[in-house]
Image (cartoon, rainbow, N blue to C red):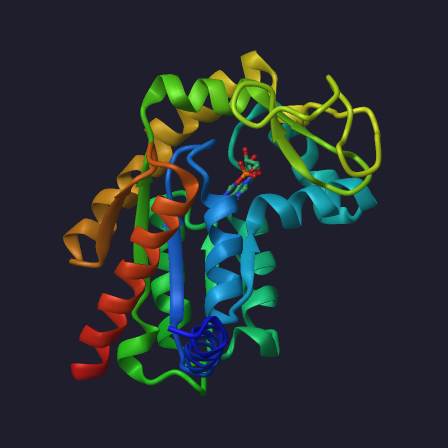
Length: 251
Ligand code: AMP
């Protein structure tokens, strides 16, 4: 088929995808499972914002805001920031206009209490563009083998200037320790040091794994194999969102 015709059809499909409500999408998975990477791809495909509680907190720490000052030490230890600080932050973000057709949560909820809070928040009906069915979140867990996770977390490097992410094992820069785009010296995220990684994984096992059970019990959970290549994982995730959206449209 003529490539231009195929390209045109793809563009129309993308535009149609973006004009339909998706509702809340929740990505669950251990630190290093690839939630951030996949969230960006979902955001682009469906035209809804990625809301990463970790990113919002890091910006607050960098700017030295009151929230940042309160969260800084806990984050540096790899433990979870207290719920009261997280709730206000998430509520403020979800009330913004760009969340009206849906949003992707990456890093939230991290405890069953946070999941319960989110259910109550969604029921309050802040989302005028979403019908009731769509307000039920689509919850996707990304499963990754433990040894893979360790390599991903210990190998992660980022450019302090442009934010580009590398991995010394799987996606190294062309020149050791230097950003391909602007040559800046790459840095290790403060909480990607080995002793903190151990704490973060322990916090996941103890506090966040029960969130998986919470959504499984409600019949909202789907799992994808996060050990596959990034594009394959993305395909699986798009498939889950599409199937759930069709089912919610029928109900
Ligand atoms: P992340 O970038 O998602 O790995 O988050 C980095 C750090 O931010 C975590 O280790 C926690 O200290 C904090 N954090 C992020 N999201 C939450 C949350 N939902 N509840 C509590 N703490 C959080």
